[in-house]
Image (cartoon, rainbow, N blue to C red; front, side, top):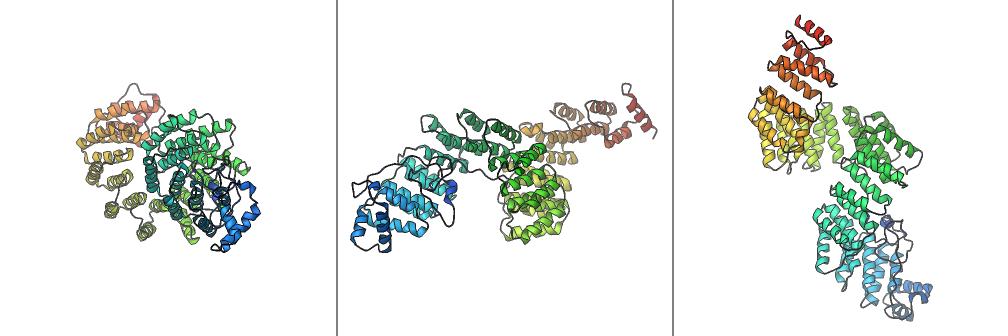
Amino acid sequence: MLSPTLLPPSISFSLSQPPPLPPPLLAIQPFKLSTGKKNASSKSHKQGSTRHFRCFSCEKSPSSLPSSHISNDFSSFLEKPDAESPGTQCFSQSLCPSSLALWLQSSHSLEDVKRVHAVVLKCLRYPETYVHNNLMCVYIRFEKLREARNVFDEMSLRNVVSWTAVIDGYLSFGYDDEAFSLFKESVREGVRANEKMFVCVLNLCSVRKDFELGRQIHAGVIKGGPSNMIVDSSIVKFYAQCGDLSSAFRKFDEMSNWDVVCWTTMITACSQQGKGKEAISLFSRMLNEGFSPNEFTVCGVLKACGEEKELNFGGQLHCAIVKKMYKYDVFIGTSLVDMYAKCGEIIDSRNVFNRMRRRNTVTWTSIIAGYARKGLGEEAIKLFRAMKKRNIFSNNLTVVNILRACGSIKNSLMGREVHAQIVKNSIETNLYLGSTLVWFYCRFSEYSNAIKVLQQMPLRDVFSWTAIISGCAHLGHDSEALEFLREMIEEGVEPNSFTYSSALKACAKLEAVLQGKLIHSSANKTPSMSNVFVGSALIYMYAKCGYVAEAFRVFNSMPERNLVSWKSMIVGYTRNGLCREALKLMYRMQAEGFEVDDYILTTVLTACGDVEFDNIDHSYACRFKAGSSV
């Protein structure tokens, strides 16, 4: 389960009463708003000092004009915009940016905004940039990006606020490429960025994963550009989103002040990138520094607890949530469901799920994934059916977990139904779904269907190739597995540890030691060589092909060994007639704290029961004697 994505330290153009976050782009007097479709205050920030502007048609300051007089004239003007009454003439002469800003702030609907816009067009021949900036921001608040862009295009004079407003508008609606084009145009226009522009562009770099541009922006800040805690937080988030946690930590440690958003950014980034221990450590440090976590922080830490199987720490957080130390919402509940499920406590996960008043798609997906992970496919399918009856939208991750549940309980019919729905919804090209379908059909020994799914995928990543290679090796299509490995490398996809181990098993079955050596050479150049499963597969492959010395060399060079590693090497010795070496290694295995299981003992005694070994301890001597008499 992915924890709720933390909102970046964003630029806000909402003019309503804000929470205590960054200063706004437009410094105007706060005014209470109520919008119909969307509450714009969720992204608003702390207001700065008010700028004063000279009126267009009069020398009086706005404060010297009675507000009721202006409001009455404005109302009558809106009712009859073409009338030429003395009141409307006075009103037209008294217009100033501050009055227009107040009217825009008090607009309760898009129609109100358009009426104010009509006033600007009718009464102000050359409106100041300030007026257009406010119009753009209000249009964006009402989700009218095209109207905001029209205002921007008609401006004769633009400043950094204008550019930042339109760039942030496109970014907030997901038009990253257009936002990037506008930023490049602002650079060509010679616009000098301020801190709000830097924050906006850093957010853009985070979304686009544009590491080089983000580094250039960071360099610009270091060389004397405006910097504050909001800019620094955006730099931290940029590096974290791009996967460069070391640079994110470096910038985070350089900051003189932090806030909850900063801490949450780092904790969430660590938990999302598999650094759960660091996330939990940061959370403890945050508490020691006297900061109060919010619900987003808790979600990030609960995700880390699930990944690291830190059930005790996650349980303590649950107790704090029950005591109402943190705000309980659907995201917190979902994170608890996911944490307990990943820690193997499916009953506790289900109890949290059952008590939740509100559940979303991620909540249902988390509990379904938990049951599928535990091999309880029938229960996962029941939950999926209940989810569909309630008309809850299922995402790609839900479908992936249902396919896994079907595979775990050999429910081919349900899996095919899910596949049909995937095709019907035209999402069969999704990488994760495609890879899971390949795995699913290999699980049911339907090799031809697995190949068909793989060939229909427009893009194939390491998981797609690994699914078909491991499936072929499992089904006995060893030559095909090696052929798929060759195609994978030709497409420029780098194998991972699971790919290497599956391909090495295929080499062992074929006794293709030459290809096995090539795979060994390739794995040696990657971090996969330190993986215990790759090492065990190499031992098995070399021993099966009769190259026992090479197998033992791999065994001795392994940084860590598991039961499979010891078993592969001992059985390799026995199958090649090296009984004394097998007995020695079995004794060494026990000395290093590994339990000799019945399979190893039976294999060794069957092959080496008559071998005398002077240095073996009494308990083993009894076993060997008994074994030789069988």
